[in-house]
Image (cartoon, rainbow, N blue to C red):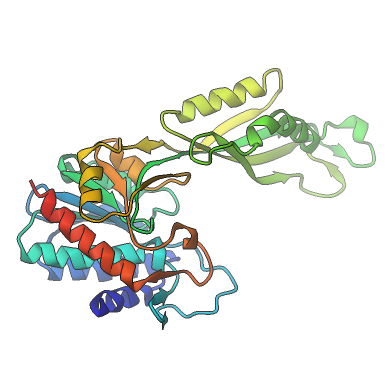
Length: 350
């Protein structure tokens, strides 16, 4: 356990909420994997690189990301501070704790000459282009299972929602604010559009089952004495499998029928699910995972599942601590994740 804690503290010592920090941590992890004797391939975007480290051919693929969201305010603990059984720091749960456990499992599996691979990215919190690069590798397609180490309290997340980020635009006519009858206020047009969407903005009964839609940002107007001729609203839709982003857009179009507007897609990630009866999830439960559940958020699992149906999310740390102040992970969960990953690698090495 002490080795796991030291490893996590080393990862936490490199802040990775900036492009420079992400690259520095990427190089640190690459050096550790090369020191283990793994075959390492890097690629992806220059400012958000990804790597695949393999021992032999086949086996389980362990997936992790090194980037974090910005720290925010109100922290009372230092990065790498240990209090009792908890290790504090930005990314401790999401997901440097999972990365530390995977590095330890990699060392153990390498010593036993068990085939496996590690998938490491640096832009999971944004566009997930690293996962898209790695998903093209044959090691991902041929893996006997892919485990994404996001924080789940060592439970298995078998289902998660997809994402659709869209820009809704209302157009008007500019005029002097003293003569509003000569213009057409785009902000007021947007008010009408959002009112039409109100039924879709209501929270569904089941957080992992229904479609959710959030207005996350509105921008309209340039000066207080000008009638605005444009207003943009950023929409964030989360949808369960097997709903698609195309179906979400169709629902928006039906809700806004008869209105004038533009709707543009900024980013989409599909929803995914792996049946609980799959060989991967059965194996995870047999080697110690603490049950299964569905989640409303999205991870790189959705990208990997497009090329390999055996994907699940399971890692140390509480999901509720991700992106929070005084983020932390319990040392006992780090140890539990290490044992789980090592046992899974042994179980699914064929």
